Amino acid sequence: GDSVTQMEGPVTLSEEAFLTINCTYTATGYPSLFWYVQYPGEGLQLLLKATKADDKGSNKGFEATYRKETTSFHLEKGSVQVSDSAVYFCALRAGSYQLTFGKGTKLSVIP
Amino acid sequence: GAGVSQSPSNKVTEKGKDVELRCDPISGHTALYWYRQSLGQGLEFLIYFQGNSAPDKSGLPSDRFSAERTGGSVSTLTIQRTQQEDSAVYLCASSSQPTNSYEQYFGPGTRLTVT
Image (cartoon, rainbow over all chains, first blue to last red; front, side, top):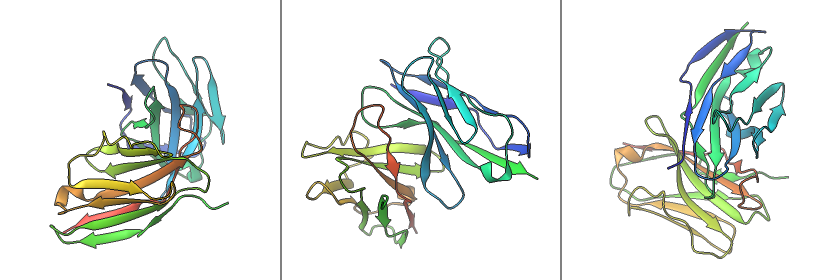
């Protein structure tokens, strides 16, 4: 079945550091790929998405590129801020309608 | 406009009791999903509704779980004879179309604690 594997946290970074959260997937067909973010005390929000190979999703300084050859969708940001502290979830939709999520990576950014 | 709303935000119940969780999707969204977020299992799909079609119940963990969607809008997730392992945050999401690329908008969730 479909699955998503993302790096386990927690991840702690200093402000302005570079962020990478790795995500790889297994899916039948051609999935759409997503990163969702959950800020403390809030619901899940879509951060960015990519619907086909080589697409790059971007939002709020975050980027992720759909790599079919490596079945990956790694999340990156060049300079993190304290306000980026949250839990990040990689997810896919392939054929069926529901999202399949990774287990989440908690990011803490310290001033 | 208004997002997905869920009620109650928190629910504490005794083992063996039944509970009902409510979801109001974004107006006009035809697709509605329930997920469960628990410490051990992460985010799991439970059930999916699309318009008047029969729901996809493939993610429901046991026959104690059921859901309905009235009038193509509001949905209720019912858990009968609750168990401690049912403790989790139950998330509802809706989307305007069910296809792969359409965003699912999530509600704030209902935190269920079974004592």
